[in-house]
Amino acid sequence: MSAPRLEVDLTKVAHNTSTLVSRLRGRGIGVTGVTKAALGSPELGRALVGAGVGMLGDSRVENLERLRAADLPARLALIRSPMAHQLDRIVRCADVSFNSELEIVAGLSAVAGARGTTHAVVLMVELGDLREGILPPDLADAVRATLRLPNLVLEGLGTNLACRSGVVPDATKMADLSRLASSIEADFGVDLGLVSGGNSANLGWALGEEPVGRVNDLRLGESLLLGLDPLHRRPVGGLHTDAIVLVAEVIESKIKPSLPWGRLAQAAFGAPGEATDTGLVAQAILAVGEQDVDPLGLQPPPGVRILGASSDHLVVTAPERLPIGAELRFTPNYSALLRAMTSPFVEKHLLTSTPAPLSGLPG
Ligand SMILES: *Cc1c(COP(=O)(O)O)cnc(C)c1O
Image 1 (cartoon, rainbow, N blue to C red):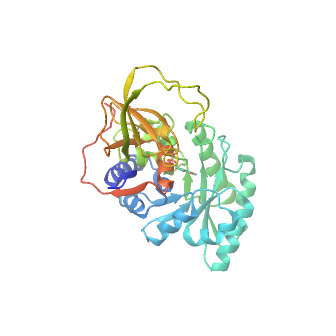
Image 2 (cartoon, rainbow, N blue to C red):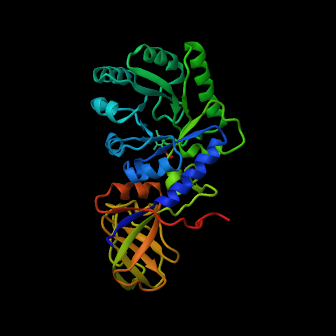
Image 3 (cartoon, rainbow, N blue to C red):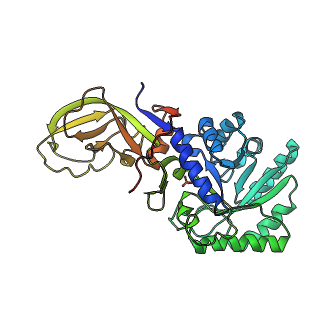
C-alpha cells in the first residue's frame, strides 16, 4: 500500500458521531457535522448523516460543492463568512451561510433573487474570542437590515469561541447568546430556528448540568474525528481517539550517535531541539515531513520517540533498529490531520471496518 497515508476509520467516526448526537439530543441540542478537516469528503459526509447529524457544515466552498454533488440527505452550511467573489457559488451549493458582514448579506440576497431562489443566513455574534461576529450592540441593526432584504431567510444566530483567543464557551457566554436570541425574537417578532452555540470546545458545557437555554445546535468537527475536547485536548468519554492514523514508511535505519557533531547553527525549520547524549541509538528516518504533516502533532507508537523533522524527513528513535520498508502508525492531532489531509503527497483511505471494541479510552 502507498505511504504516507491517512487511514480514516469511518465506523469509529460514525460511532463518535452517533454517541454525541444522542447525548446532545437529550439536552435539546442538534449536531451540525463539520467536514473541513476531511476536505468535504462525501464518504465522511455520508457517515455523519447516517449517524444522525442534521446538517453538514464546511468552511470552504470547494468542499461544499463536493458534498452537494454527492446529493446527501442533509442541509449544507457554509460556516465561514463568505468571500464577496464567491456569492454565486455559495447560493448554489449552500442552503445556509454564517455571516457577519451586512454588505455580504445584501449580496447574497441579490444573488438569490437573480437565481430565483431563497438563501438562509445565520448571523454570527462576537462574544469575546475576537474572531468573526457582529458586536452585540450592533446586532439589532444587523437583524433589521437583514429582515428587509428579499430572498433571504434569517435562520438564526451563532457564535464561535475558543478558536482565536481561547475564550471558554461556558455557561455565561451561552447565556449571553440565549439572551440575544430571545431579545431579537421579542423585538422583531421573528422565530430564530437555529441558535448555534459553537464547536467541539462547547462539549464540556453542553454535556454538563447547566441549562442550555436557547442553544439548539453545535458545529462539531474535531470531536467527531479525533474523539477529543479541544479545550484541554482530553478524550471525550465513550469516543474513539484512534479513528484516524497516519502511516509512514522507514527509508533509513541505522545505529547513530545521539549527538550531532560540528559547529551548530539554525536547522531547516529553526533552532534544533536540545539533544541529550545517550550514546549510540537506533535512529530511523520515515518518508514524511513538514510538507505532509505537522510533525509536532504526531503521537508515535509505543516505544518510538520523535527526534526531529524537516521538509521530507521524520527522524525517530526506537528501542531497536527498525526494518527498512516497515510502516509506523502515528495518531495525528487536529493540526497534523489538517495538514496531512491537505497534502497531495498523503493518500487518503476512508475505510469502513467491522465495529471494533472501544480502544484508546481513558479508564
Ligand atoms: C471549524 C469550525 C467548527 C468546528 O470546530 P471543531 O473544533 O473542529 O469542532 C465550528 N465552527 C466554525 C465556524 C468553524 O470554522
